[in-house]
Length: 152
Image (cartoon, rainbow, N blue to C red; front, side, top):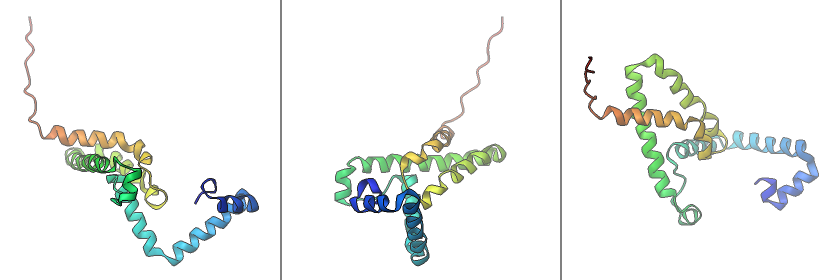
């Protein structure tokens, strides 16, 4: 809990001060990671899935707070799948040109898999997702016929 959302945490924050509070929480986090690596790994996988599909839970209590989640899951998952298809097609056509985009798509959100998931954190890479999804969609249409321009 953050101090703002918990009177107990706020009391601890006031007692220890900001630096002391952060040091105490750092120690708790490191202890948790050492003692529960499997839980941490499964939560990181869950964050990864959430960032690319929007899926967090179908629990009725959760859905009362987030009623549009099923539609968002469909939208995010579809866009992710289209982006993967487009990325693959673009990479096959021009690997050297596509590689920087691939690095950006995989490197930027990586820190959020291990820390705090929030779809808003994916927004900086969303333009690349749209570009690759567009590549997938465009590749399914036949190329336009070239027209000759009449000269006078």
